[in-house]
Image 1 (cartoon, helix red, strand yellow):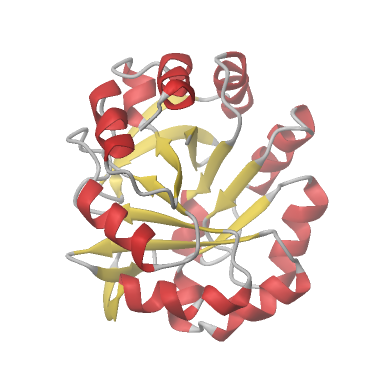
Image 2 (image 1 turned 90 degrees about the vertical axis):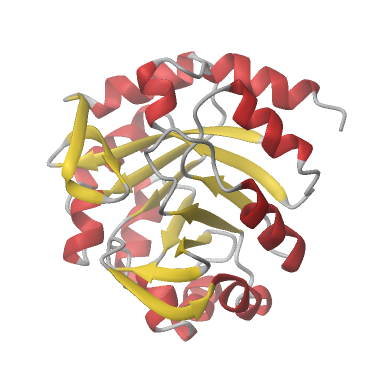
Length: 245
């Protein structure tokens, strides 16, 4: 399992939100490229970037920062989400050197777009499913749909999606542990690899995720915990690498 540091971008700065609320943001750095360097030096093998402005506006806003990070680390897998709602945007990011694009809102509102994107950019598409009480949320978590997470995930199995990033909104940014039960249930219900996101606080949370013994969980995204120092990236990755299960 990979430990994947998150760099959430708002107005060009690196921030963290609580439960997706744009007006409840903590700024951790005004230099996201330097922050990326910190996590790379700490031994991460993938980065998770989110264009928060883009998620709300429906188009990329912090694209220049994303491009700068990709250019700095051309051999590091980078995944980017937030405002990706057209093939043109995906092409822009792929050309910039990003390894994976995360389709969130558009995947819920126009599921057929996922298949279209996968055909145009094979191996590059991740679907981001954000849930509240098991139902998918969209538009920067401002709207909660009537679609069940597992039902939607299974719909994408035939499209060639590389992974699903699953976030429990109630846990995100709250440092109370991720929703292991729901994440493991999703991983066991679908053939698509799952990346856990939201709420990871410390090494114990990583251990709990590993102990769920869901082989479909290939990664865990962590944000606030690594910024506030309750989780060390290198230590967490070492735990994952040594886990025998």
